[in-house]
Structures are given as C-alpha cells and as structure tokens.
Length: 494
Image (tube, rainbow, N blue to C red; front, side, top):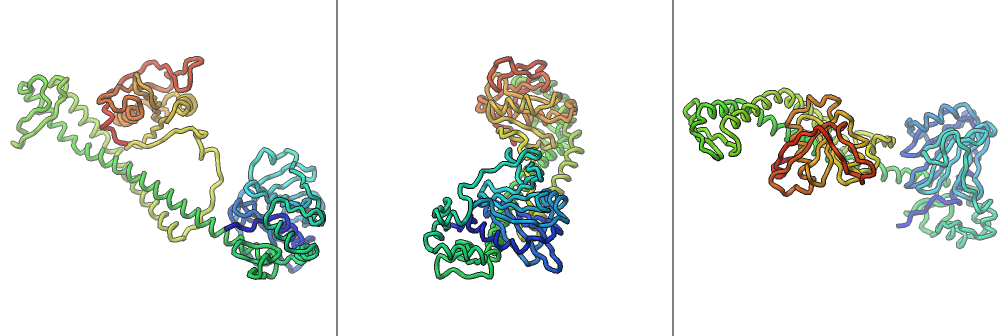
C-alpha cells in the first residue's frame, strides 16, 4: 500500500499550526525516536512541543501539546546547549517545499528541517549562515561551512495553486485535482487533518477518511505507528544478531572443550612416549602403530608416523604432552570467560525477545567498518587469539599492508594462490602457541588453491618481513625469514 508522504502541503499545514508557538521560549530539547528531536517551548503557563523528524521511514514535523517521553542524544544535547533560553521568533516554510526554517532570537540562530525522504536532515546554522551542527553528517552540512540548499522551484503555496504545480507528490496532485483553490488554503489555515490507512493528510481523499482535531495530531498518530514498526524491526534484527553471536560463542566453547579434552590426554601421551622408548626394538620399519602392554597390563595402541624413527615418534608424543599440560590453565580460563559471555548474551536475548530492554540505535562509527568494505573475515582460536584472513586479492593486500602490525604473525599456503592470514600477537609473537599457528595454517590451507591436497605447506613469518614488490598487483608479496609448517586441510576445524 502506498503511504501518504509528508509533502509540501503537509509542511505548509504544520508551519501554519506552529505559528501559535512563536514568541515562546525554548526550555529544553530532547530526542524523540530514531532521528527526531523535540523543542520544548513555554510561554507563561502554556507549554508546547515542536517535533522535527528526519527519519527516512517518515520525515515529518508536527506540533504537540501532550507530554512526550524524551531521551538524550548527541545531537539533541548540542541543540539544548545552544537553544535553551532562546525565543522562537519565526517558523516558516522555504518556498513551497518540504523544508522548514525556524528562527530563534530574531536570526541569531536558525534551525532547518529538510524533510526530503532518505536525504532528510536537521541542521543548526549561525547568524552568518554557517553550519554549527547537523543530525546527519554530509559534505553539504560540514560544521563551519556555509549552509547551502537547493532553492525551491515554487515560491509559495499560492503560486503552486495558480500553476497547479504538484511538485511530484501523487497525494498533492490528488489534493489539487479534487479540491478547489479555497479548500486547500482553508485546510492549511485551520491545520485540518484526516487519517486513512495510508496515512495522514490535511485534506480528505475519500469519505472513509477520519477527521482529527488537528493535522499535527494525525501526523503524531502516524509517527507513533511508524516508530513502533521501526522499533519492532530493530528488535528482530537485534534478536538475529544476538542469536548469531551466541552461536559463535558456543562454537568457540566447543573448540575450547575439544582442546581441553586433548589436554586431559597429557598423561596418556606421556605414557605412550615412555612405552615407545621402552619397546622401540619391537617397532618394524614403516609401521603405523605399535601394540604393546601398559603399566597396568592393559593393551596399549600407540599411533606412529611411519616416516619418523621410534625415538622421533616418542619425542613428538612427549612434545604433545608438554603442550597439552601447559595449555590447560589458559584453556580453563578461556572456557570460564566464554561461559560467562554466553550466559550474559542469553540473558540479554531473553530481555530483547520479551521487550524488557529499550533498543537505542548506536551511532555509526568508523570502527564498525574497520576494513573499509574489504572482504576480511575474523575468528578467535580456542586460546582467544584473533585470526584474520582476506577473501580476495584486494582484501589480502589491505590486510597485509594496512591491518597487520609488524609483530603479528603472517601465514600463506606456499606455492599456491589463496588467503593471507594474520594472527594478532599484541606485539608478543613469542607467546603465540604452536596450536594457534596450526589453527591459522589450516585456514590458510583451506582458503588456497591447494585445499584439496592431502598435505599443504604453509609459510609463516612476522608481518614486518612481508613486502609487496614495486608495481606488483594486489596480493603479491615477497617474504623473508619464513618457517614452513605442513597441515592436512581436511583435518582442520574452524
């Protein structure tokens, strides 16, 4: 269903109604909804509000005498600092357009509401016409720059009626076609308002339209509906994001538990290594396992690497036992932290689903898009180290040259095309355990052209030893002081 837009005729009607507030003093400014502010005005014992919304869902303005719950926002705080105590000198429409100019203290400050759909904005300007603050940051409204905006093609409502210029609004065209000149002017003058399922408008288009006591009350009713719909969509989005985050934490917890289970085998690995040294004479050349008797008389099967000697196999088992034992303390701490995070997320999830928390939109910051649109993925290994990798040549180049710190570890499948992988080391590369390097190496192998090979060599070094040759295409690098680790892509788990 088409919604009745807040067009130039709606703007004229609200401006007409707002004339009753001229001469009142601004006693406060608050946020009302996602992208709306309310000027709280008082004159003697009378109190009123002028609400300006630049929300893309329904940019509008309306006057209210009701008490409305207001919140704080960065923009409303800035306006409050500048406007409190000032007198509302004038409220006027700019030409016959969806733009309102609010003059305070006879021109000392001007607040503009540009109600142009997705490009809607609220801007505060100085007496000299320079931008002080804007709700939405845009090149045209940079602080300190002269305020510029497109001049309306029709100078007034009267001229629009004479020229029958609907300004592109289908509702306005209907208003001009279905009502005479005087009816339109009267609707604006008396701020008449009608509600239909499609929305609010100063004139009735059908006998089913319900009359409201004012146009502002009709707009306020529609605005409240739009805000509820928006809040519900944000709630659904928040629920989906929380579900995804909980799922990711649970996956990380399972990985930690797998690592802990392997750590619990430290004693078993130690015994296997000791038995292998004791019975190494029984190992046949190229054998894949050794079956022998354990300390309690039970049968013990010791897996072997056929390419290694019995002593080398024993040393490998001793090394695994040492790593498993050393990692246990860190893994227990990580498991505890993840369990607490999951519990906290689940609690918030239940609160959001039940509507017990108020969702306040967070301001978009540069940190929310740290990779400037490049396809870079990130995950935590069971020890809590951040591992990042690029999904194409441009992302690889950005990750290696812009994101990686000099002492981060850098990995890539040797002799193959594929992802650059970076392990965040917090400037302590020596503290990165071999398990984390193996974890990252599996990612490098699985995201390379050799992902179907049974064994893939992965080179790794510090990021400061990786450079891009001059004039080379993105993703091309040369490295030095690298080491090589062999991994089986099919065995890696992420």
